[in-house]
Structures are given as structure tokens and as C-alpha cells.
Image (tube, rainbow, N blue to C red; front, side):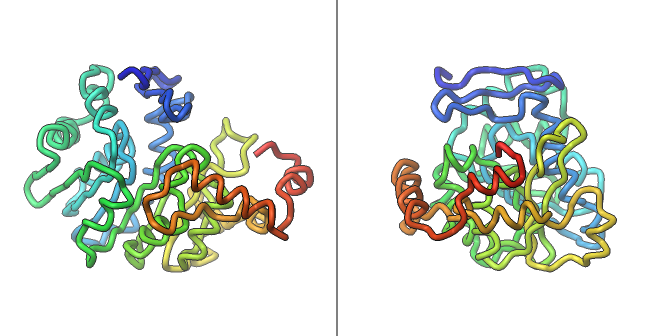
Length: 298
């Protein structure tokens, strides 16, 4: 655990800080709070009330909060669940399961889900089942049944600047291909590079509104769908909104140039360097001009 430092966030929930990536696993305001507001609520699980089975992919499960929050809800309903997780590092979940404050957040069924993943990589409870695929997500994604389509894809790597491998145009395209027609790909990122890759993959993109204490932000994340959502539904939806003029203009700047990883084996330095060269040659609007126009530091 030398490069992972324990943190207690402001809502009292456990998180970690990675010295390797120089980033925390969660917003310091609250690990549990972030998963609820940026993944569980935008999933709007009621939309799946007629589905017998819900299929979930959690990309970078970390300490498990995103899946934990969603499973807590789904296990109270009559859906069958098929869950898949992609994660390169087993330590965060192992660390979390040793902490009483983490254990105390979950029902016995969800805690059993985490314990099964740790012990055997598989979870089975009645008609519900799950598998965690340890290793590089780029390669492990291709090992999942190619015909499987996910109702929810939870995309939660370290930031694009720190872990561009899992935000590349190619990886996002692969994820998008596995999204069901009525499904949702959900991520905390509102980066123009990520959104442009989602759009290129043929998805419709929507913004997660900032929380009350995040009014300095213009978005708390992104939801992407294959099915275009009814504008009337969006206009009355408190969890999703259409992209604002500021966000649309952001997609016309150099920030929208995607991270590229054509071999699916590139390292972060190579991917970032190639993008910086592409940005320097681009005729797109300089992002600093967009920031000045909208008086934003992001």
C-alpha cells in the first residue's frame, strides 16, 4: 500500500489517494456521496422497471462504491442482475473490506458481493451473478462475451490527464459498442475529449447538473445513450440536462481532440504526447479563448 494513502472524506466514507497517479479515488467531499450523485441517481433505475434482467459493466471498480450503491437498489427489486467489473489493481477493494467504516455502509447482501469478488472473482446469489476481470481493462473487455450488451456502463478511471489509456477514442468506441439500445454509459468526466469520443462512437450525450455545492462547476459528469432521449423528458429531468451553449462550444476547441490508442497497448506518456502534438497543429479554437469567454478555469 506504499503508493495508496488512506483518506476519510467529508461525508465520513473511506477513500484512497494514489501517489502514482497523484489523484484521489474520490471527491474529498465524499466518496459515497459522489457515487450516489454521479452514478446511482443519473442511472435512474426506474427506467428499467420492465426489464427482467439488468446487465452492468463497472470499469475501474476501485473500492466498489459505484456498483455497491446500484446493487443496493437493484437487490431490493425483482430484477435479475448480471455484473461484470474491470480492474487492474486488487488492493483498493481489499483495503476497503478491512475497514469497519466501509463494511458498515452496506447491507449483508452487498457486503457478500464484495467479499465474493475478493475471494473468488465471482459472485452468485440466486439468479444474480457477477465476475471481476482483473487486469488491463483494454484487453479484458475483449474477453467478455461479444454478444453481451450492457444496460449500465459505469466509467470511472483516474482522470484523462492521468490515465488516458482508458479514455481513448478506441476504448470508448469499444465500450459504446457494448451498450444496449436503452442503456446508459455514465461517467464523472465532462472533458471535451471524452465527450467528442462518445459522440464519434454514435452516442447522444447529456450533462449531469452540478450539485448545490458545486455551482462553480458547469457539469458534474456525462451520460451517453444510443437512444436519443425525448427533449420534453430532458427538460423536466433533474438528473440530466441537454448540453449548454458553453458545453457545445467546448466541443469545438482543441480540448475536444481525443486521446488515441490505436494498438490498445499504448502507455500514458505516449498517448498524451501524441495528443499534444495533434493539438499544436490543430486549426480548432484555442481552449484558452473559450475559457476567457466563459470565465472558467476548467
